[in-house]
Structure formats: structure tokens, C-alpha cells
Image 1 (cartoon, rainbow, N blue to C red):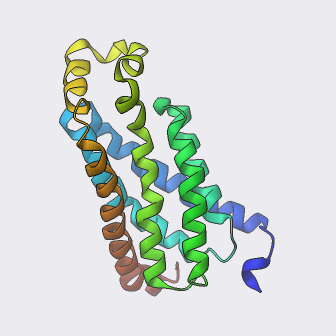
Image 2 (cartoon, helix red, strand yellow):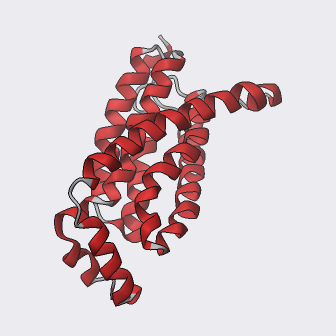
Length: 195
């Protein structure tokens, strides 16, 4: 069967390309984080726009493990760019779960693919774990942001009710992004022969 084949060079190239596109979107949206109140909105904006390359990537997926590697690359990118190791851990866990969801739909189910988009985007929540665990330690190595910024961020992330809200935002907006990405696939990418 197709999904039992080993990963090939072409698969790894596709993983790298789409992970890079997703990371570019994340980086562009993350610039909004310089405005403290916009930081939690990353859990809304990134999943919606990240749904486009993710859903396009799924048209290339036919083997278990491809999404896990994609998610690990995203998590590793976030770790390397200073967000700590939590996104990488989330990348591994969410990647495996997402791979299982997509595989359960035989790599062809639109509903399962959209469902998986919500789970995949929980990686974004990994960025915020250090702020909820120990925000003082998080900002102790980021004094260059300035005390006013740190104080505002501390006030925002002192609210524990924000945790379930951010998790829900990642999942729900991931679904929205999945639907949006699927819609664009039908309207534009398939016509252009890309998907």
C-alpha cells in the first residue's frame, strides 16, 4: 500500500518546502507580537493563514511520519528562534497525533484533514507555555524588550483563564484555516495544477 512505503527524497523535499512556508508565515505574524496585546492573537492568526500551506502539503502526503517531521521542523524552528523547547515537544506530540488522524482517513478524507489542521496548530500554544510556567525566568534573558513591554506581557499572561482560551483558539482557528486552505485548493491550486 502507498502509506507503507518508506520516505523518499521527494517526500523530504516536500516536507522542507511546506515547513519553510509555514515558518515564514509564523515569522511574519510574530512581528505583531511586539505589541503586547497582539501576542495572544498569534493563536488566531497563524492557524488561519498557516492552514493554506498545511492543506496544500497534505495533497503530497501519503506516508505516515511526513506530518510528524513537518511538525518537528516547525517546533525546532521556534526553539532555535528563542521560544524555548516547548514548541518542539508540542511538535512531536501534535505531529504524531495529526499523522494518525490523516492516516485514519486514508490520506484522502477532507474532514479528517481539516480536523488534523486544528490539532497541528497546537504547536503555536507551545510558545506560551514558558510564560504561564515562569514568566519572570522567561523575560530574565529578554531584558532588551524593555521593562514596559515586560510588565504588560506579565499582566496579560498572569491570567490562567487565558490557557484554555489560547488552546481553543489554536484548534478552532486551525479548523477555520483548514477550511480556508481547502477552499483555496479547489478554487486556485487545483486549476493551476499545483495541488
